[in-house]
Length: 277
Image 1 (tube, rainbow, N blue to C red):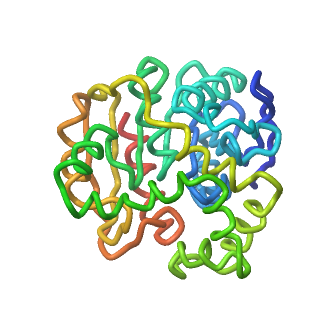
Image 2 (image 1 turned 90 degrees about the vertical axis):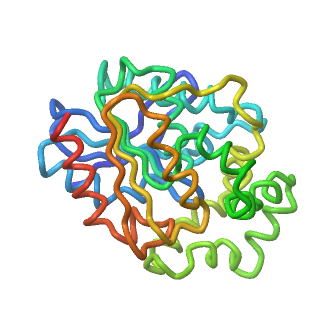
């Protein structure tokens, strides 16, 4: 059974879905854009059945009570701070962290800043940030894949384009890989006043101030071969950015939306990784 939670922090209360016994091994799952915690329904439910305590929050901007207006409030420092604040509120001194897309980026930065808090790290789709930054400079393919970020930083214009014609641009982003009911749910959430701007503020907050180092936490990185956002150059280079135990898994013929397009495969890999650390 999936539960609905509200997790109060100094920044506001985060909505979340959860499953599993309260004293189960804690796993925190971070969603990406333009999704929400329900991206992880399959994983949360399965982990709960297996005895883990799995929690997936709607992150900053996606939870209505944590939706500041200034783009500067969505910097990576704030996003990592939210992860720690949520874990603290849940009473988790040590936990396993799983992230996809933007949630994956936050997971990498959390592992860099707070390695002692993480038992393991699983990142899906998103390469190590330094590997991605290098690929954007040296690999024309990755540079082209990432060009959308520049457009999305244009204030207000992007929101109008994404939501017009029954949010056709947002719907096409999913490339018909997800059930229509799931896409409708994401569109409904992002159509709330200020919600899409808040989500896009993750792109508008500016680059992180510091540099991210090599990751010492035991890491599983999952990349799908048909990912439109992240090419193979950064995906393969990620191995050079982890000094701890590292496992790379490639899922063939699946898009960027791998968490929901291939839920069984993703869940199986996550459970294997958790059980080995």
